[in-house]
Image 1 (cartoon, rainbow, N blue to C red):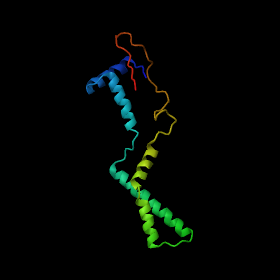
Image 2 (image 1 turned 45 degrees about the horizontal axis):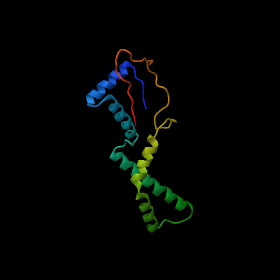
Image 3 (image 1 turned 120 degrees about the vertical axis):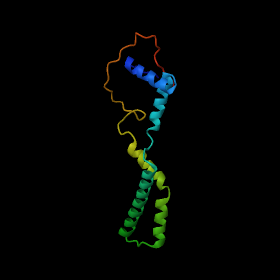
Image 4 (image 1 turned 180 degrees about the horizontal axis):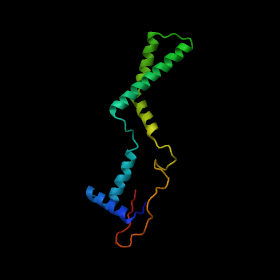
Length: 137
């Protein structure tokens, strides 16, 4: 895999790589792999707990209303089962819901947009003996 950069972009990459103490190719690799991690839910633990409780409450409410609407009575045993069902895996359901709402909605490739980015035209770098950057994954 390879990419083309303007002289200005390459200078920025070199500066970032030097700051991190790595080569430009390693820096690009780190940035790409970091982009994959950014796709994880960014909710705080408190927000995750709040959403999990809200989803559990929703499960209890929907099942209670359904039972009452279908003519079944609500017994203490049935309520205990509903609560146990709602509590089982509630954090996993909350994390899954967060992942669904933070997933890219455009038809990008690997979660990245395929829309062109407006930038200055690319020019071959002829003033420097630098080799093109190749990123092999």
